[in-house]
Image 1 (cartoon, one colour):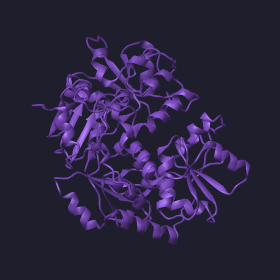
Image 2 (image 1 turned 135 degrees about the horizontal axis):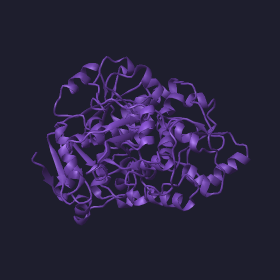
Image 3 (image 1 turned 45 degrees about the vertical axis):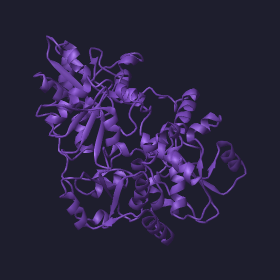
Image 4 (image 1 turned 90 degrees about the vertical axis):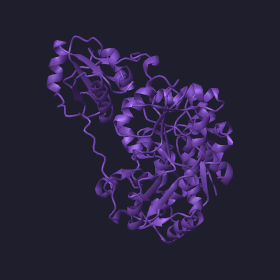
Length: 519
């Protein structure tokens, strides 16, 4: 293939020219999280083809890939994407180094557009907030209040404010009326840091809820930094849905205020036929609801997470995004925020009863190979008859791995297998990692057997060992060490994270600020 290239100044213009563009950082996630372009989507080479098909469904989209210097993994990624059928691929000349040399900012962290948006919302809307000390005073004074945690169950279980109930931001419009029975009850929304606290509180305010509503300043991290005790391992089931006239009127007001298109099935079908635009169909309900009756070809994008981490679901800027739900309020609420983030978004009027669909993504992640059994792996491990290559995440390898196994990742896979005198067995727990590794072997005319873990842990009959230092930190390019233990007792890491979050706006240039339209 003839690889096209683009310089930093031209790419900067492309990112703000209102035409569709996908910008993929193809380094591993840890490298991405240390320093990347503001609008980049993390699509690591280790799982490139698997994730690209979902993040950039239109093969003719303008697609730019980059790495550190424009001469390494980005070239391999461009070639791999070309083999997958992408037709308009560019490599950023000089990678992140070239971008910085051209005078443009690089950013640490993840989900930058969404997190920056939260900070801008607070500045623009003056979202009311309470501090950890103020909330503690309310507790001691036995005031009438409720604490709602705007994160999913998995995050709530890790740590939560004592007495809080779990209600992800995308569920607020659908369930808030089951949490309160009078307008005097103060509502405090919290998350782990800042973004979802702010967005959750402002969601209720925008819906017209009459209760006093506040964001908990700095979330669970702020609570811990003030030396208050968090709950761990707590489970809080979602409250039953309850949509009354006030919520319906509030959602209609959002439609009018933010000019949210409510489209018919016929309009969706017309957009599906438009080969010049990318189209996403997103179910904003819970994963449990989606598994029961999600529309064919749709992604499950739970509403709170769709706002919090839009780049994990949509990889094409200026694409069409169509949301749906079962109730007529959740999708509208999420759409109101995506519109302010600068996305072209609409809501499917018929919701889950619609007859529309998109082609279902089908990937044969084993490429026709038959995975080996636990008994076969046990025998191979006992006899040392094959090279055991563990391609799971570096942190999972540290936690538990077979004593004879070696850890690696797709960009380094050939370093392990080059000149090997034994057959190889790949140990994986993720279809995306399996698919990427097999494609890499296929590209170099190599083969391997696969052992695919079906659960999070090895079966008991396979004796494993752990290590806190293997692989060494420098090799763990898939893991973001950036304040990674901020939730595990490291107060300095928590402070650094909150400073990073509150400092995001100051790093933006005028073009990046103008991506947003907050009302």
